Image (tube, rainbow, N blue to C red):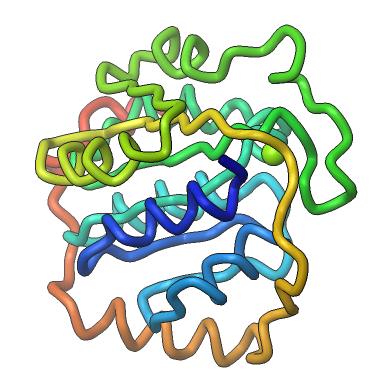
Length: 203
Ligand SMILES: [Mg+2]
């Protein structure tokens, strides 16, 4: 199973959740598999999908799924500490761990060697951490998590590589932004401080 096959299972499990997707090939694969206005594709800011998703979850009373990669989470690992502190119930971070930097040629990443992001998540105070490595487990696991209070971190272990023919996203960043903002605005508005614990101690 490569990221593409894992992403297909992930997107099959998505209902009306807002999805923030990592820059590069991950966003291109999501666009190819299941484009929808509720998807926010990143065209920059490598490493920040999990942080953008976290902020969105804290600001809106909607379920938010951030779809991120091992290399990106490794370069912004403080995001796990922040999720463990803020603990928004409506947030799920999915880390597709292919042990490589896929968008730059599949060079080996930290998770090919010393880094276990699920352990970092647990050590950051995230109580709901799941790891799956079988394709058939992905959709049922994500569906279950999305039905329970979070925050959740789901690590999907897969192999490097991607299919031929995944093209660039043919709509520009401003259109992605505008239609995503409209999709967010069409849902329930407002934040509920009771959904988060502890974040104010950062102020
Ligand atoms: Mg990767």
